[in-house]
Length: 302
Ligand SMILES: [Zn+2]
Image (cartoon, rainbow, N blue to C red):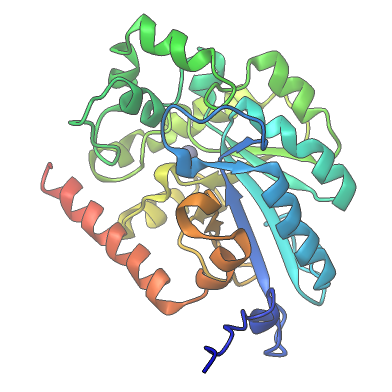
């Protein structure tokens, strides 16, 4: 007897069939093409533009409207697109933004661009530093100890290097590009580093002040990490909105914007299935548990 064929759930129908408008906020980091060489580290952070194009095409076909994440939404389903950090390969997105008319936000970690230093998670991975703790180490201190070899190796690689200032200017000149805060050094704002938030945000804002279409009151949390104290501290006058990567839908007008962090389909399945799964309570719960675990580690000095 032939096995029953597995019928995959079609596209995003399961999300949009409830009658309520769905508000998606997507997050990506690095972009590559089908012909790019393999990454030296963190392959999960690289998404092929062709895959992103497919996802956006499906969303457009499902009548999603592309909007900025901080905008009051029009009626109907909406989707925002954001990038974190400032990888130079984000320029690959511009033709897609033009084609689908997508206003999008890049949350910029400015130290890497200004000082031309690779992102620490990439640097620690290629230099084999297993003792690195992304949630509690002092980022500014760690940048000072990068070897010239590690810096050279990552800055010479399109999968890993940050924008130069001039490249970011050209990128920001595009009518669809908006820039926003991601702290200067990408220091997670938890534990003792919450005290550095005002300085991190001020330096980040100073760097962005010369660019067009900046959202100077919108901050994406470095590494998506936060504790109950993080939100309270940041929203007490430092910024107006903070962006997580906790997944799920967002409620318009709230000061905490939850984003769905997309990773390479080779690691976690098609982008469309990642969007669908981001609405499962198990995934949301896992992210909350991770935040609590890191909060406890930070509090205990681990
Ligand atoms: Zn980041």
